[in-house]
Length: 85
Image 1 (cartoon, rainbow, N blue to C red):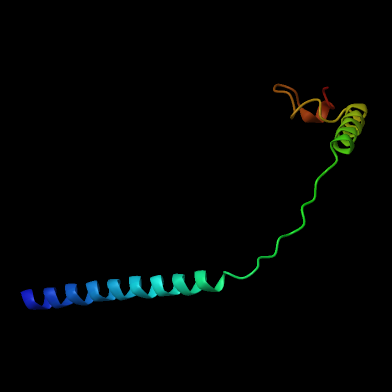
Image 2 (cartoon, helix red, strand yellow; image 1 turned 135 degrees about the horizontal axis):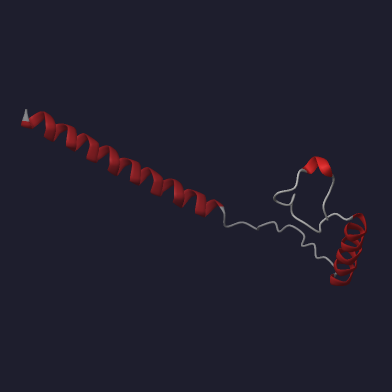
């Protein structure tokens, strides 16, 4: 009984060690292959003046429509009676 357990433990340990060795070898291969030139994506920046003007315009439009003043219906009021601002 003891010999079966020790054989099983030996097999599990050997499998674990072999998996670690295989992962280490794959990592070394991947790092060696990535030494070439890298490609960088273009960087897009927003002009701060345009972003500010757009935000002001959007806020004015939402204010004129009455949208955005409140997050949801007020408590105690039915939504069928109309919108409470």
